[in-house]
Length: 273
Length: 332
Image (cartoon, rainbow over all chains, first blue to last red; front, side, top):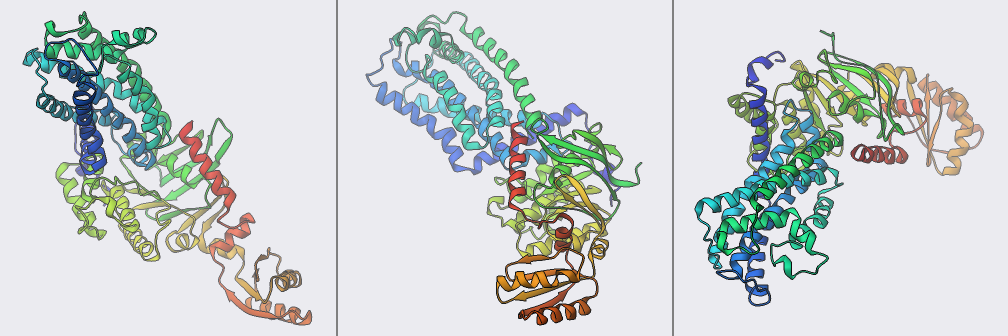
């Protein structure tokens, strides 16, 4: 019985196996997402609450942004960016959990691609973010968001959002691998995403913030991405301040981040198990 | 190709920049087609050895081959030939039993149709077919352990590593798992098993190695280990702990082997069972120390361990050491 390894092992090139392994891991993560109600709430319900909070409570009069169509057109593109970044936190939590439960040990003793654990995790979060974008678009339109940038630009804006969140999730992968458990992983991402999403142009104009905060809030990557996405979704006439090269800057930030965070996370993965 | 399924030569491993020595030069030769036992308390280095042999961890020094392939230089060849199941039952809680096996099958790069067939087959064999489409979260400890073993067997590996497969299981689940392991060995699988249960090693393992603090302190068949110890254990129960310590002083001269006292019970390894018992009774009677009970029994591997190391198999200090070694692994 021990010599039939040849007949049961399928033959594929190593690249095709690597892709297959990543998809297997991503599929497994997405299945888990559907099965854990709290994860579903975290992924989909919380962003909807944020939209309602800023649209009808803070945005009803407290926040004033002079933009055609009103504050809702300013808010929605930014909140979509925020939601995908929050979603990428799942990478940290999921990896910390796998490490905690010894699953990573098992994976390391399998003849699978070394990269598949990390890549599978980031790819599944990318998949989840696609769903998040669709839901958020629907919710946005329901609360009065009217994007005038055109369909192609809207898709382009979504792609930039997804790209940035994906690249950032490699940083969250590093945190997940460094954390002692999943609760700590979640806590460790907080001091990172809080300033990135709130000290940004997502909810209010940076020009209304205190002077000392403005340089950070203007040039940090999330503000740039939000600016680019808002510009693409609403069209060039509706943008404050002028978008400049924000689309290119957003792409550069994404590529730059993954170029640093990807190798960092991979090195950490090799060390931990 | 090596004659041995697993061969380790002087394998050492340190953690935390050399401060923790988990393994201090261990050599093993596991013959094909039998169960080989790695016996030892927590923190003795058993799990570290399994992690090295299953390519999860690299040795600090020394070499090891599995099915003739070097664990450091040819890890993928090794991974294609081994199955690993452990005390932590590393199955995905959020998937069903069937989904777990299919995932592992696919990550083992097996034919898709084979994966489905094999998963069904294993679920049935391990009595999990009814629970196949239930989330593993709802499984009992014994069911998880069987699923974990099933996952390790998806690719029909010729060599199986079982790291404390029955730790924490109830007696029935333990019996079930033992039968499964025996069945696998009959089918030609080589099993390297770690355990801290001497009864388990006694029942399953043809040959075994006793590890303590990262070194091998004894090896041989379980029968050999018991014979080296002496033929019989004389166990005397006294009415009080004072009587027990007095009794110990009186009778320890009967045997050259160390005696053990625990509460009101004194245990002594002796060569001639009945004659030693008579001798003990005579001496105690002469000193006017009353006995509450006396038994003669075959030595267990527990006695072997006590004899070899001077301490029992379960020690608080070594448990703490093991836990800190684990933490250091993660932080390094």
